[in-house]
Length: 382
Ligand code: ADP
Ligand code: ASP
Ligand code: MG
Image 1 (cartoon, rainbow, N blue to C red):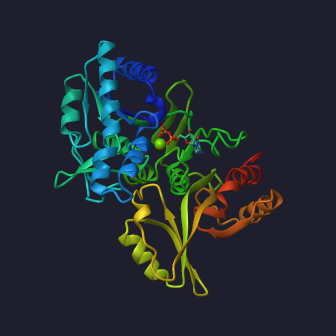
Image 2 (tube, rainbow, N blue to C red):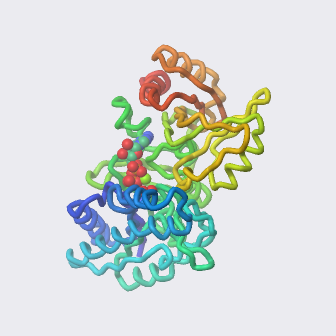
Image 3 (cartoon, rainbow, N blue to C red):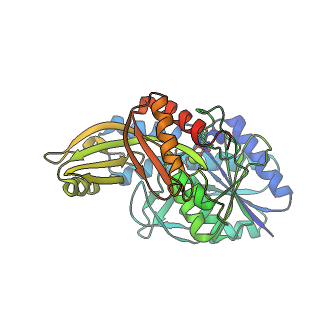
């Protein structure tokens, strides 16, 4: 029997009505003759609410206890979805990350998957049951509960699809696929029918929320094609395919979850940040002045960080990027993008260009305007 893995994000299971809709979508796939594994996120805003509780208790919560806490949201969602599927007359059984055989390293809050042993899921499928899995979590070899980083349910789905040799892996969300920019910010953004895994990886690495970067990287390593689709509508979605596509600016991205640090002692600063559990997104030293961009998503004890002598924080920043494989090769995109930002009155704080992304650092308050300007200049009409 062919196996299908479907991932449902937090907005897809935000309330009981939506849980029922997901149950109907899952059972329709089962009735079409597939074995189904449904991987779920926590309902709606649950993970943020749990983190808020932790912050009220302590400014520097233990990373182990954070993982114990935030892994709970997905357990609630999996049990409710399983119950809703039962009520539709189908046998279903829910599993935690640990029961699903998602084995990780020990890095709490941003753990990496080291092995996947989905024996229990396989047995459930063999018995004709629908398997429901709590996303975003795993277990270390010492049997500690770990989480995979914010947005990590996508990774659970991809890892299980690889291990179970699934027919396809579908990432179901509140948008009907991957767009050329965030459709909530850029009204002219269009859905991509297909994109390559290279392009999806470039986009995800720049922090576009729609696909989790580690999940795309995992799919890339294993050669797994993904389908990004809407939970609520039947549209074709976006097929994320293995073969590369010709170079193009595939998408404009914005990341606002970044903090800038500066120090003349760049390496000392990176050492201190790393020891404090910060994820370094970029670091550079120009004529003695060091700058570090830190990804704040999984740094839950940021408040406890003490700056080393001579270092300072410049607060939140945003990076707006034009992504796609080989985007730097044609210098026109950098020139056109920069001119468009200047014409839109966006103050550019820094520019970097790599093979897969042209990045402009801007004030978070100007990020949406910058995203629209870059989209008009580099994607509209192409
Ligand atoms: P889920 O909770 O289902 O995982 P996310 O919130 O993580 O969903 O991702 C979906 C959101 O990503 C959309 O609501 C959309 O606002 C945002 N987004 C950002 N960039 C894009 C893009 N290029 N294409 C589609 N959605 C995007
Ligand atoms: N619930 C987790 C989060 O909010 C994981 C996920 O949604 O993928 O980040
Ligand atoms: Mg997501």
